[in-house]
Image (cartoon, rainbow over all chains, first blue to last red; front, side, top):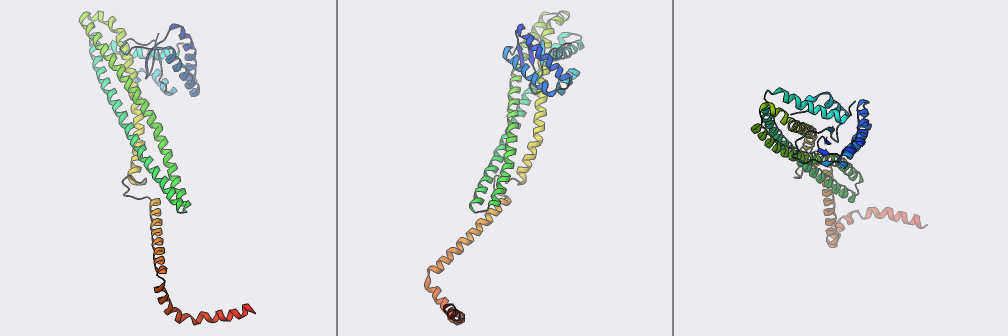
Length: 92
Length: 267
């Protein structure tokens, strides 16, 4: 499964690790919903670390989209919320 | 409810679909998108250059501030050597202020450097994808009808669209970061230019330097005085002659109380 980390590119992650990712993803979602910046940072950090660790970098010339997209490492809740709320934020 | 990662990917897909839906002939979308891709590539390269410029400006400022700091250190030592602890304290206080600014700038420098690396990599990724897209686009245009093209370009288009969205946002973040740094860098340039921090040419002097110079010139005067005194007392004969004429006139006066005291002290 292809996962994109914003600002870093795409990673190919084996299906069997997706469950672990989903667990942290839920924490991330809860943190965003409850505006818990500390929890958000913590969950984002572990999630990014895990994807980088278990994922394989996708070749640069791969043209397909990603099944999952992760915020950039220095993203704030505010930015993530704005992104989810309005696709107009994405240029191009 | 979908997790955050899924929701974010859907946002990108929705964006891509919107662009696709706008075109009557999807093959036109390919050309339009390709033009956009080239524009974005230019923008990323400019972004990398802008960040590099900001980074170099910071490096120069750190260098200038460090020179100031070294100079203050030297002044503190000079002041201390002359027993002026107050002046040394003032110089060290200013040095500590500068060190704070330097370490702040160094942090910013590290962050800009990271930004530059990220953008450089993003530019490489985008370049590779744009090249791949161009090949795919030409194949699709040559091989398929408009109706067939629709299904053929879906994946490639949403893939490149996602990449463009990602890179576009990265560029925006880098711009925001350099802009906020520009203002602070400008303030430091002004400070450096104003002479509040002595400039490198050494033409304008700060008050600590003035005080040290004053002390140095006072010392010079004292040294010269001492030297002169030495010369004068070294040539004992002329002093004796000159002194003799005066002591001759004044000698009787002090002699009297001395003589008057002696008998009292001895009795």
